[in-house]
Image (cartoon, rainbow, N blue to C red; front, side, top):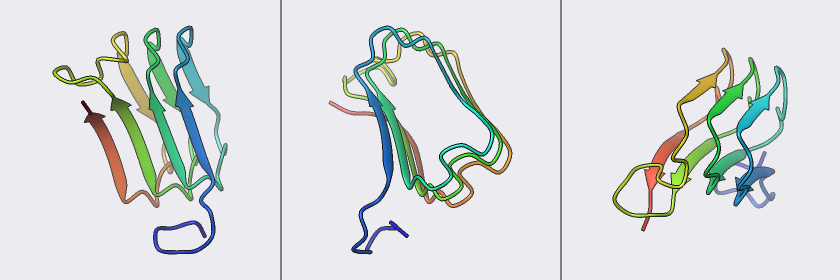
Length: 100
């Protein structure tokens, strides 16, 4: 199933270093078999919308900054994250991180 401790490779969606991305919209019932989702280094990203029952198999969601001092400093324009009902229901790790 791709969960920690299994030998099967997890199905992951990683969005990183997309300098012109302004809006991320993932529809209802999308990416249901993905186990991990992370986003970082998108300086123009303003909003993230994730529909209902998306990423239902996902156990890890990370929205991270790689710069010290300011949380989400590499997402300086991010104003909101909307996650629909029933999404990430298997998540055991949900983090908004700041990394050096």
